[in-house]
Length: 104
Image 1 (tube, helix red, strand yellow):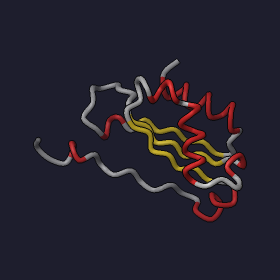
Image 2 (tube, helix red, strand yellow):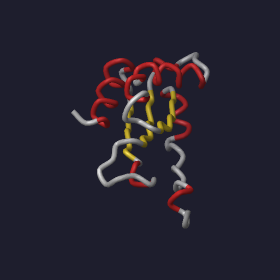
Image 3 (cartoon, helix red, strand yellow):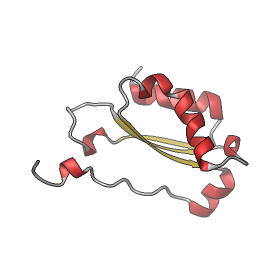
């Protein structure tokens, strides 16, 4: 199973999300073709109700701790309750990595 699928499986099993997107954004960085090192996660779950943003991120980071210690270099998290997602409806766009903007 690849890294992206592992992230999807773990978050789905642990947090029962109403909405889950996992984007491999490695191509937006200075990486080898086919890399799985930079991810963006958009997750909507009632498991986040009553939790501050830092607690939500800690919960996700704990579920993915071994991946963060290994192949995953960067993880952008966008964590919402159902109510927050209904109001927001879309996660922020990811910026282009500075290493891709010009010569080094």
